[in-house]
Structures are given as structure tokens and as C-alpha cells.
Length: 155
Image 1 (tube, one colour):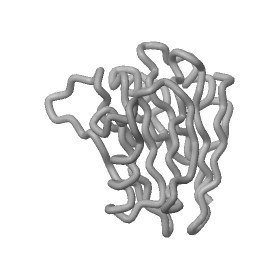
Image 2 (image 1 turned 60 degrees about the vertical axis):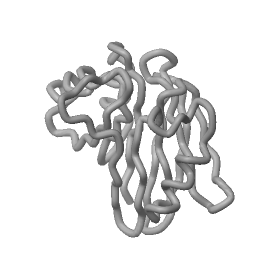
Image 3 (image 1 turned 90 degrees about the vertical axis):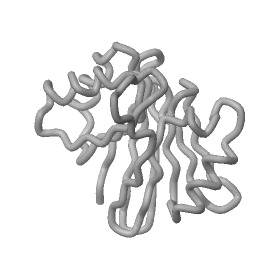
Image 4 (image 1 turned 120 degrees about the horizontal axis):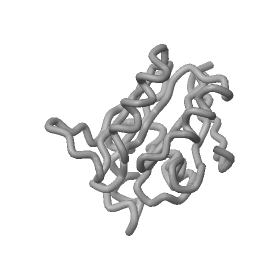
């Protein structure tokens, strides 16, 4: 079983992430963008961490990576910030992209609102919320072909 901390939208406030990383057992971290400098600081504070990150709309990198596919066991997760999919208006393009890429889940940020729901194709659409603005995050547990999740707001 793999346990993953999912963060998004820290916006120069990393104390919540520091606390969670130090206190919640996990194997990996997914950071869904906004702000890239924050996750670089986390990498320096916790050099042993395995971190996967994508570029958000407030990240200005010379070679942005707006999405990635994270694979573990029999599962594939589409990981993105969400702004390129217009997630503030609709989740349909994100859902369709996840289905096309044979992913069982699509993780996104950008809206600063926690959200978790399975779409009509059985794909988990999950937004951990904003760790920097609201102290929100998610914990995923991947076990072979099963995804368990929990949303938290106690950072």
C-alpha cells in the first residue's frame, strides 16, 4: 500500500505542509502547483521526500509541466493544477482527458475548494483544496487497483 499526501495552492504559506509532512505517515507527496518556490523549500527542509509536482498558473518556469501521469501498482493518476482544463467552470474536459489516458483518477487544484467525486465513468475527480489559504489537503491510499481518499482541513 502506498500513502500519498496531496497538496495544492500553498501561495507562500508552507507551515501547514511542514506540520503535515512531519506528522502524517506517507510514502510520497504530490504537489498540484501554486507556488513552485514553496515546494522547492519543502524539498530542502525534507530532502528524503519523494515529491512529484506540476506547474500551476502562478508558477513561471522556463519549462512548465502542466500535467503528469503518476503510476503505482495497477493505477494511473492524472495529476495537474487544473487551470488548463478550466476547472473553475466545468470538470468535463478533465474527466474526459483522464478517461482517454486510461487513468482511474484526476487530481487537480486551482479552485481552492476541496472536492472529491466519482464521475459517470468511475474516475475519481479530487481537489485537495488550498493548503496555504485554508489548511486543506488530501491523503490517498493506493492498494493494487483501489484508491481510498480522505480530505482534511486541519493543517
